[in-house]
Structure formats: structure tokens, C-alpha cells
Image (cartoon, rainbow, N blue to C red; front, side, top):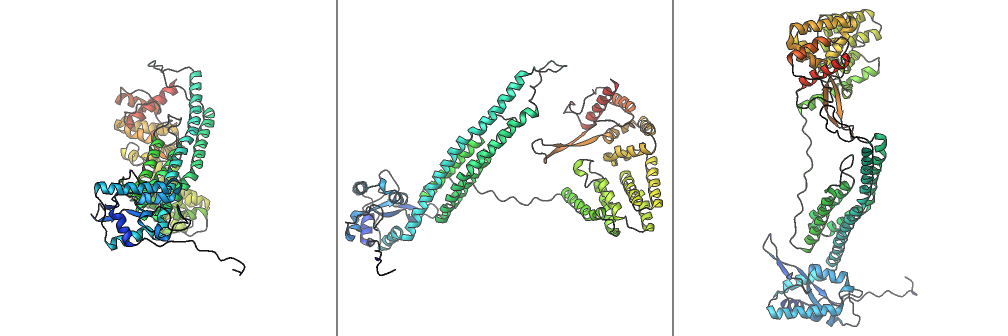
Length: 582
């Protein structure tokens, strides 16, 4: 500062009231000075039974220059006297100073007169000791505590305002997806009215209205999805403002943290609820968003009450963090199987890796796990073919003598599906490494295994159930479809109890996926879609009709849901046979 610059004057700050003045104030007042506020100046702690201070002493004209209702003409003695002071509850002590334009000097003097008159009527006050009076002075006039209290009040009020703002904007924004859903619904109605209703040929009952085509539907679905996302983006700033105010409240008033958490959780639920519309095609809006908005305002009201020290609803108990899911035995086996195959994949990528006997042995053991995996798209990387194929690649660089032993051992594996799959994969590896003798040895083993398989034995159908189609297809490829048909027909004629095993063996599997979320697997559908040339359809159909005389033909899409799997498969074979006969 230069000599020419005037020295800034410090603002006037009058002294605090003396103990006697505080004792006089509390001796002539029982409750808050604001008319209609019934809060006593002291209250009981419900948990401990202790009587605790529930008030501050407020200045009618501010103690500090620039403060609320500052009077520059008032002397210090007058400022700190009983006539310029009024005991008030914590909430209203902050309120009159936060918005002093609403609480002029004349109004506060009226309140003070009414407070004293009430004391003389009810003859109630709070006789204080000097220590208690000092406590009130410290609580009322400590600059830091007062500043924190004012800022806390500001943040709580701002949070309440932000919660209300968010709720109202969310209600208004809901009209946008409503309009998009209404347009989609109108399009569906128009299309359905333009097409005649079909009816069931057997019962004459009307079938459900035809849905619009995907080409017609997609623009409306995209519009609804985009609109929902736009609503969420429009609400994000309001949620951010509310959360920021809640952080300020937590910092100033740690004891209301649980209520802040409640409000914040409800605000985030508003975003989630605003991002959805029930049904595809859209249905009428449900009450999810309305319930969430009610929860938000309920939580905000409870936060304000907790700040004011009023009895209020307790926030919901926080949801404990989800515990780590316990790995089931099946999940462990699946994980270990995948990990083992990942260890072996380098042998399928690189041709020069040496033979690893331990890894090969582990893969042969893993083939038993893969045997029970249906031949589905999701199982291609870990199924039986993948497992035996990796085992063969691991053995690719074994010496000739070792490879010959591995081929013989592979042919001795059981069940049949493992033996044939492994021998075939070793045959392919022998061909790749230009070892014709080993290739021929493996081919002979595979041919023998397939030709000697006893399909009259029910066990072979059961243990190889998921691989019957492939095994019999390979058998037909080394002989003829006619020969395989005759073998199955003879087996069934001699042992009719094989029918169920044959039906399961000829069945196919397909993945059922969520149309809206392709990554979500709903289940595996077991069915018969087609019959190979080597299948003795006429013989099997005759046996089905003999064992199930009341069974009717039905496609995989039309069969009764209340029938067991064998009945469904049998009815589907009857359906395929009827279609081929037409």
C-alpha cells in the first residue's frame, strides 16, 4: 500500500451481550420468538434424556456493520442490551438473518413484545446458570459456527429447491416419450385396422391382430428410444445440481448424511425411471416414475425436518454391497474347462510347439466334460470337437512311436463319441504332418469304431445322446444311408423300449435368446426340425403310433406346452412325416 492510498476501515463489530443479559432473556421467554412456532428454547434428547439447547439469541439490529438490519446510529450498549435481542429456535434464528428483507426491525420488536407477554401469562421461562448463559453466547455469537450454520441452511434450502425442480422437470419431460409411444400405438392401430382378422381354421376363433412389419416398426421404436435418452440427458444437469448441494449439506451437517444419501439415491432413481417406457410395443405408462418422484420429495422433506431437529422419517437402511457370488461346482468345472482350453490354443496357432504329454492327458480328461455340452453356437469354442481338436494339435509334434500309441489309446476311449472324435482329429493332424501310415491307422480305427457300434444297446444312445446325429452321419458316410437305416430299424424292432432314446438322440438343440437383448440366454430349445436320410422315419413313426396312439402331429411351434419332452419330439416327427407325405 502506498502512502497516497487511504487505509481501509475495519467494519464495526459490537461486543457480545453479557451473561446477565442472556439470563434475563431466557428467564422471560419459554419458546421461539416467531409467532406460531411452538419449539421450546431447550428440548430433551430422546436417546439420552438430556436437556439440550434448541435455540440461539438473535440480534434485532445486527451486531456487525453490514449485517442484517444494521443500525449505524445505535450505540454499542443499546445493541447488546436485552431490548435488541430475541431468543429464537435454531431454524428461525437463521431464517430471519438469511432473508432480512422479510423480517424488518418493527416486526421483530412486535415478536419480542409478544414473547414477553406470553411469559407473563404462562409464567414459564428458563432460569440459567452463568455456565449455561455462556454456552448460549458461544453458540449464538461464534462467528465460525454462525457462518457454517448460515451456509448449511442455504445448502439445505437449495437442495430442497433442486429436488423440487428436478421432480417438476421430470414430470414435464415425460410428455416427450408419451408422445413417441402414442405415435407408435397409433401406427399399430392403423395397420391392424387395415388388415382383416384371421381365424383359427379348427375352432373358428379370431387370432390376435397382425403386428406391423419390422420396417414399419423400427422408426417408431428408434424415436421412442432416442426420446428417452434425450430426456435423461436433459435431467442430468438437475441431478448434478442437487447432488452438489447435498455434498455441501454433508460437509456442514454430518449428522444428516443418511438423509442426504436417501435424497441422492432417489434422484438417481429418477434418471433410471425416466430412461424406460413399459412394453415393446409400448403399453400405457405405469406408475414407476410417479412413485420415484414421490420418493424423492419424501426424502427431501425428511432431510429438511432432520436439519431442523424435528421428528421425521428415518432413511431406509443402505443396501449392503452385493457379496461376491459363490461359484457353484458346475461353474467351477466350466471355468476350469475354458482355462484349460485357453492354455492349449497356442498349439492350434503355432505349428512348432513341442508335444506336451501332461497337457494332452488333461485335454483327454476334459473331453468327458465337453461330451455333455450340446452342439450349440455358444459351445463351439469349448465343445467336444474343439477339445479333441486341441488335444490333437498338442500331439502334433510327438515322435512317430508316441503318435502311434496316442492313436491306439484314443480308439480305446469311451464313450464312443470321444473315441471317434479324438481319432478323427489325430487323423487330420497326421495328414497335416505328412505321416500317411499314422493317418491310415487312425482312419481304420474310426471306421472300425463306427461299424462295430451296437445301436441295439440302449447305453450307446444314452451316453452319446448329444452326438448321435454326428456319429450316425459319419457312419453313413463310410457305408450308406440305407445301411444305417436298416441297423436302426432292426434295433428298434427288436427292442421297442429304444424309442425314447432314439427320439432324444435324433433331437436338435437351439439357443433361445432375448429379442431385445441378444446376449441374454433364455433357455435351450430341444426339438426335431428335420430328419436325415439315414433315419428310418416310417419304422419310427409306426412305433410312435403304437406306443402313443392318442398323439397328434405338431410342429415345434404349435405343440402343447403341457406335454413332456418325449411327447413333443414324437409329435414333431409325426408332423415332419405328414409334411413329406403330402
